[in-house]
Image (cartoon, rainbow, N blue to C red; front, side, top):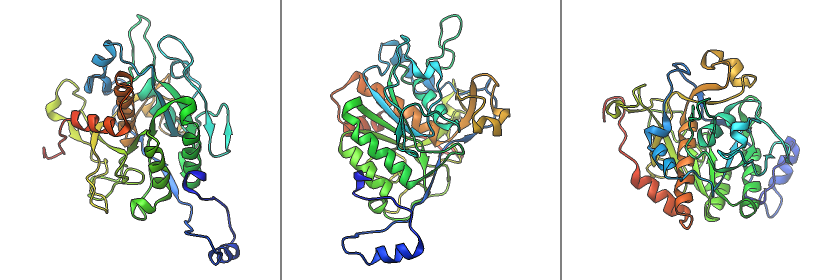
Length: 352
C-alpha cells in the first residue's frame, strides 16, 4: 500500500507479537470493515426523485455542459456491463479501465452486489426513452469513468482493499485524467482523522489535485456520527436530503433522518453540503444481490429505488464533473468552494 507507505498482511497471533518488537515499525493497525452507504428505500420506481431537476443540472446540460472532458473514478462494488453506463450520449465507450482491488487485477470486473452500478447510474446514466428524451437522467451523462471494485457481492469491504484501490487510482490519475473520485461508503471513526489509514490515502489523492467526494454515512441523525472518510476535513462530505415526493415544492424538503451529522471529533463542521439522497431511482441489474434481496424496490426491468448518503455523494460527484467541464483550470479546492457557495441551506424534520 504505497500510497500510505504501508503493507497489508495476514498474521498469526505469534507473528503479530514478533512484528511489534521489530525496529522501524511506526504503527500497526488492525484491518477494519467498510460498508457501502446506500440502502433500500420506500416508495416505488414510479415515485422517484427527479434529482437532476432538483439541483438544476438539467439546465446546465442544456447549455452543453455534460462532463465530457472529465474522468470520474468510482470506488465501490463495481459497475455492471450496461450499455447506458458504458457509453456516453454519442454512443462512445467512456469506460477507460476497470480495476478490482480485491484480487489486484485490471480488466472486466462487474458488480454482483448492485450498489456501485446504482451510484454510477446517478452520475452518468444515458438511458433514453423511445421518443428520444432521457427517461432517467443523470447529473453528468458524458463523463468518462474508471470503476474500481473494492466491495464484494454483499457490499462488504476492508480497509486494505479500499486503500489498495485508492493506491491504484493515484498511480493512474494522470494516465486517465482522473479529476473526481466518488467514495459512497463509510466506516466508524476509530481515531483522529489524520491517524486513519483510509484518510491518509484520501489526503494523498486530495494533495494530488483530485476532487474527493465522500458520503457522510447513514448513522444519523445524532451528532458526531460522521464516518470515515467523511470526517476528513479536506474532502467534500455529502449528507442526504429528501424532497418528500414533491420535487416542485422546495418548502417541504428536509434533511433525511438517516443522514449522519457532525461535528467531527476534531470540531469540523460536516457535512459541507446535502444533496438528493431519498428514493433515487437508478440502474441496477435484477440479478444483483441487492435487487434479489429487495425485489419490492425493483421495477423488474432496469431500475431500483435506493436512499442513502451514497446516492447523495454520487449527485455531488456529478456536479463536480460539471464544474470542471465548464472550468477545467479550477483546483480541487476551488471546486469545493464553488459547490459549498452554491448550496442552499437545508432544514431538518422540525423545519430548523
